[in-house]
Length: 323
Image (cartoon, rainbow, N blue to C red; front, side, top):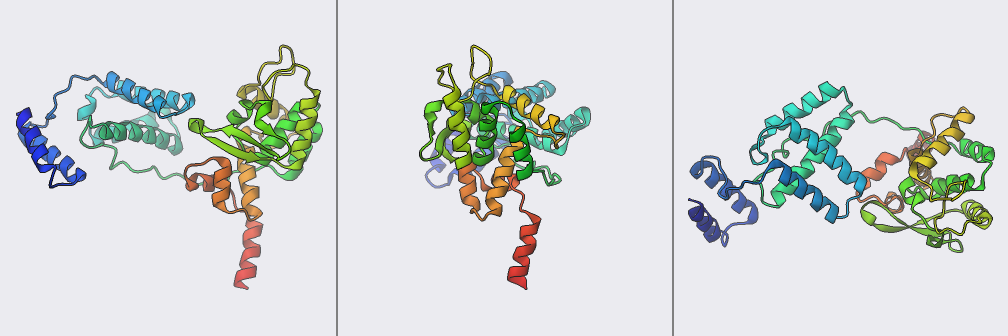
């Protein structure tokens, strides 16, 4: 049976497109192999899962992204006993509904799980382990679009004025003027900076290299901080106490959160600096495509979610163009 099906598919390959060939294979399997694949396979769910994670690592996904895939898909496979090749759309829908009810989580969280499962099954389809992804008919979960806060120029000045360490001022100015991710910031070395041109090279998600730019104020504070260093290390930002190890993401988070609390400011978190930079750039007229380039987004829709268009500017533009 298997050899006959393969021969039919090979003979028709000359006359049909790839989608048509896949459909033909699906129909043949359904009617002639009683729902079983024309290519019997004893691969376990765990083996498919491991192959997927290895593929993502090879594609250059960050360890954080791979860990999130590992967590969400492992949870799914532990709740579904059906072999991967036989999982259908209804089973996945039931899982997502149960997941939200059991964990009392937001729609955003459920949609993140959906996206990870979609990536997994799309990979299985691309690798020809399954004929068709059961995720195709499970669409994006609609979520409420919330207007997220940015940090005002006044509050930035308050935070900088309250700093007692040159390092902290340099960190704030660099985050505020470049919009870089905190993971990119802590991985910077002194040699990555071009102080003369006020730019530096960072490595974003998937180790993608890009150039970001900082203002004159950030340059001044970076120079002061670097000149004050006596440890001789390569890392741009290090701990204040000996042995002056490279600063970690958690260290930056705690430091900035503490500075904000001392001043009774609205919650100061690292991602808010990135969103603030994007909003300021768009408000000042920078084309969204250029903001996308600076932030290192592969999709422009992601950039638009970071930026809040100032309502005052909208009103001014309406009066200018609409009278």
